[in-house]
Length: 407
Image: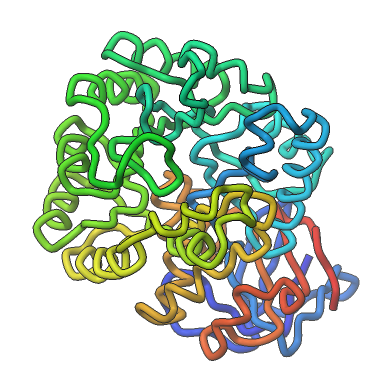
């Protein structure tokens, strides 16, 4: 299949190349440039802009329904599954061909999407994240025995967290997460915005507990990422050996340098903060949750600039939750305002692939890579709003297949 006529932005940070053809064979990019031979399958993209398929490094597909109703048994498994499948479809339709789910799905949904039975992005996931009793990620009612929290899981579909206290319980639950198909682990080492029993200034899990998870991840040649808003919790996690931080609200120059020294990546999540600040009830959360966003938006902005100056690998994640996750591309719009649209695109393609450790397969438009591609009707480098407008993404190609074609 020859893709011809488009301006190609390859995701490496290089300048756009007008009218560059892309040859796709057996699901991969075979060559850039050249002229299609007679009789070749040609997809005419004249006047359009082609980029790598977008990657969202922080999603919660398992939280695709009203969150309160989903966790108080008011929604059937069928309805929750329908919401998740629709979220997967919308995500792919928005140009995101790969996502990293950081807590909420069980392996069943990833397998169903991978099989092609449900349209959606490639899903890498941590299975249920690891949360301490009463910590971020533990959403049980105050009168509910923590031992009963697992009753909220829907086997094969959704499981937001495993409550873990003590190094040995962390080790056991890390192994359980891997049994459920995890390709990495996630822990919550500080309080969070969407929490019942903590503050953003709280630290969670001890060095030994985090180190136990790191040891289990290392045994499987993978890594631990951590939810962290404050630097006290993040420092303990880095010393214990984690390799990625989500949010990173307090990251400053000193912390950024520590991250560089230890090879720790950063995935900021701005879109969810703006969404919760505007109306947290849309996600099925109490109205007061918006007030908990606090300094997270400005803090993450400062963290991005500090990390960039130090040389931190910075990815991109939306962290959207609840039933209205249509604006996944808003993360790139917000990042464009902090840096520039090209850097936002690189973070959501090449650099996210590096964070996910799949950069040998996806993330750039280069020969040998899987042909995951997004095509825009306008140049997002000139008009970043196009990142967040699926109607202006007429073509999406996943593993060499046209999965969306509205030219």
